[in-house]
Image (tube, rainbow, N blue to C red):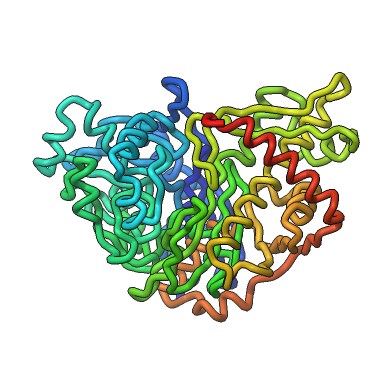
Length: 497
């Protein structure tokens, strides 16, 4: 039996395809960046055709490097940037507008209007989410409102809508499957996470025709087969999860109380709460961690919009480092007597503040502040924001997040300096696994387990291996003083302060 699994990891700035062998080892990778579009202040778009071409190219590249053909792949798993939305024509598959990216803030006025109408509680009770431009629903409403004739065409069944996974599956299957999974659906502001169904009340509020939306399946399910012309064989697509939930799976966080954080463009911390749907009182998100065999596992999530993106700012904006990997070494040279705080609200602040109008600020500058201090403040901002999320989780679910260990993944975790800083600020251990491709691994496990060629969850969890544990080294007095300074900096940055 063929045991190779292909994972498609469609991210915010690039697409990747990774081939895993029967021992769950990554043996070949294809990666391709694609352009970002910023048509207005706070707007972020992708051309869906760029995404599609990059996915096809990376799959073919990964197969070529692995010396395999499409016929050698048992199944495909897909993970994707969440909340980014596409609308396309049913007949042609052609998008009617650029994809509106999760970082995009153009629907802030609509969110504020809905809040003033007293509707945020309605959305939160049904979806577990807050009214923020981050989520897909208001983006979809914007496209239907602004593209001429779109709403009427949608009502006539001529248009289809979905997150990136749905668009890719539609294209991969030659227009035969309009589907998504429960995790991606749970991020749209349109999906009732308690009943596991599109919510007609919310669809009516945002004036979105239900006929546009995909069928929602389990994370490990039959999503269709690829068109033979693409990769030389019909390959079943058997696993789908949004990127952060795929990382939960890839980190084997299958037990209630387990916590992972992914440090990529942003940072996303997800706490498994099991079958318990925990309603946050501290402005975290209640979401679906995964749905397997018809059984839903819930989670609390904190979303930080800017993590690795701040390091990119150091590199590309300030040009104080040549490579992102240089940030830790530069931060280590900073003057320890300076207390510089960067609040990286470049696209607003996420959890637990949810301030779409806040913008980045830096405090504590002196004549001696230089590149090293900027680097340190940038990396420390990630640790401070993670502490904000953990504090909120502990308040929301006292029984499950008290003495947790944080499992980490994403590009930033290669920096020992940054991970030690996170451990110091959390006053908790931080575990970095040997396998850092956890998002792709999670998608691959969904597909591989569904195909019957990879192990069950318990066996998969036992295969998780530790690279290094970072334990707190900072004294409590210093930690409290630094956190006090951070919270003061945030207070002065908030748009309503």
